[in-house]
Length: 420
Ligand code: PMP
Image 1 (cartoon, rainbow, N blue to C red):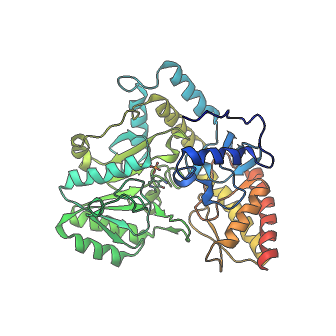
Image 2: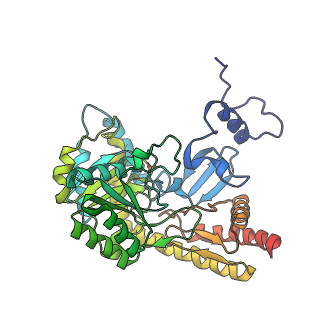
Image 3: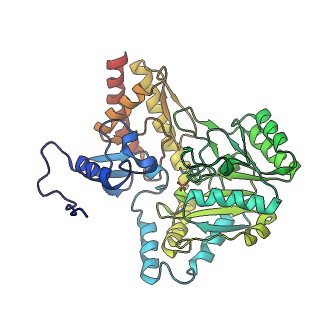
């Protein structure tokens, strides 16, 4: 038994910041300091690990440094941290009940709202995390078709359990036995994988767009989306769109509405409740029976506060043309970055939808320029990510974009100085 250190060091060791002291203590009691994608050790030197405040599109670390945030908690924050309408709805629900022996009435209101917002949806099931939703989609597709094989794009991220986690540590071959791979946006490879599945094809599971880390982003082509739909129809398989990351940023009805292609099942989470823990599986009537047959639940899946927050979030997304706003702000950021890169004589590639920016540098195989750029922007008060897609929100206005561009101008100067 070790004694518990006070959270605020009374006399911080000299030169050791509060963030550094927390990291040092965490290493002893949390493997690797932090699990998963938010481990700041994955980021360049200077990135804080711990935050104490968040408001609008701004974050404050434990040293009280303020940042304009372009990660939005890796997606969940879509209206702004502490959005007043969402917080009011959450507080009002919390005053009544959060978790009980059954859900609150708002579950029905939310389900109706989701079904009217998402055109392919005849029904919805709520859960907590994106992985719950993608896993449920795969189970549902298998239950509904009585088949086993699922096609997934090589390199796509769908969650952190054995059937899909990117690390193979602790994963058995059996966990992956019925997955077959194709290349995103490559119709021939999709058809080859479907041929290999033969009459055992349960589903094609596809991310809303190719948002793999450390590479240029790629929107799904309409031809690819239509081919996936046609293949599923021909083979009697389920088309599943994983909208966990992109959901509600490209189109409120689902990202593939922009392509005119509707899935049978879709997985949602991140932005649906503006930062409250909630996920959803939507599906059409073809899979309603299967959705009743599988046993799917979790201790916290019926919590009411996140559902009340989701109702307020969806209403506000509809009322504010949030998608249009994020697209306009994303264009402004992209145009600004483009002009700066040109002026500094530095080649950058900005790919994917403007609402979810990705900035990679030419001739930068080890991401050294990208890391230098992001670390310099951070010192000027802007939190970017050097190799993961970023996220805009309704709270990013013109003033914040312009302020961020002042920081990126300094960051480009730092890159030009080192590599120019
Ligand atoms: N699918 C996609 C496309 C994701 O981006 C993520 C999370 N980054 C997941 C699934 C898994 O979601 P969660 O981390 O909430 O389980």
